[in-house]
Image (cartoon, rainbow over all chains, first blue to last red):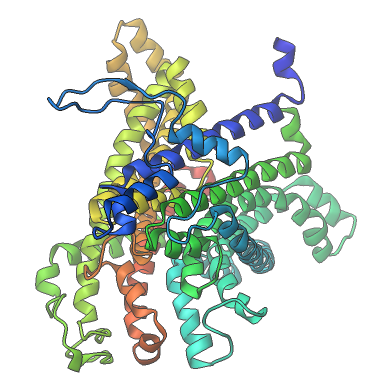
Length: 334
Length: 271
């Protein structure tokens, strides 16, 4: 047994177990969240005027007439609570079973399968997140390297100050500001929608701004740390140009911690995408969640979006972890 | 202490004063609409101009400080207390408590984006100040718990703790009197950064229509109301001033947090 824990695949197995645990928790949370809705979801979707038959039909179709979980502790007529067992025919197991067949239920409003709605929107969100990631990296690496190389000078101060502003200005402030400058005043870029590439620029910059600021700081401190290492002295001593030292040697080592941050920030990016998509009317998961889901009280859509965004995030984190292990063999050993 | 920390502290003191003295500082009624005064540029009458319904933006930004600070303080205080308690228990007792808290709760809570969880909760509970605070506390406490657990694990091995144990002090006494005071320093950094995070989250959720419902003068609500194209066209100041207020507040708490971190961790000072 001891040797099992020492085996080189153990950390991977452990991560996979945690992954399953997290997915299980997220799915459970998502299925039980609907119990938080004050009052009856059927009433809040159909409105007070609907006939009792309509309510009945709606509840049956969406499984709301079944008990929510394996058991409940309802109050009886006298006001006392009693434990009640409902068995396996409940909403929780139904949601799970359907999910394993790739079915996330039907939208309360449009009656379309939630999975189809999500499929239509998923690519748009990924496109936005990747574009934001690219912009962030393209800004952060040069800025961070220049700041780190010139540590303590005015160049460093300016770069660090720009980064700090980027961290402090949230997307919902930067976004409308960019719309004001580039769409309203200059009329260079469209304010909202998703048609050709020009529609992608403003949302991607908005979403990438905070990340690029965080990355700039990371790259900077990483470069400063690496510049003090012995191998840099060796590289300089053998007559390499400063550019080669920085871009070939220092950057290669300095990027390792940056990769982790990138992966961890992907979740922030996905959550931030919800806000960015709302600002720019970008038809991704976030807009689906906020407008079609929350705005129209379509709880099935909310469940589906939360689930898909969470799982995307968890998978991205796992992948980051693997890339990190591959980049830095020291972690594999410890 | 570095200069930026001092700047941060000054901004925070001003903010707190503004929030406390809001009724005396505000020049107009925050809710009073007057369509004949809409989209006015900043002037001596209206320092920050007026918005699309003719409300005075300066007064609204001033009262907005109350909402932001209130949410921030409650969220940070509640999450810090819960996080410290559970983190200290997990770190001190190890065993099954630790296995549940650090093995399960940390992994799960940190495995998906906090803002998404808050959005989901508020989506089902409905919008409102109390629900917003509840949601932010539920996602907030984990960071403190993880921090304190790590600290307690370190401190409990120190000689003075062993000495107290040898003298027969009870677990509660060791934990509360000997360990926690020595483990709690980094919490201040976390709390300061947590204030920035809570202010941002409140504004973000209110912006999405999931936090404090309009017409309350939350900075997030003000930005949401100012961002349609016709308002941007005729009154960009309706967006700029609440945006500046958020940015300054967040910047100030970040300055303080960074400064304190450097102060507490001398290794970083030279950088």
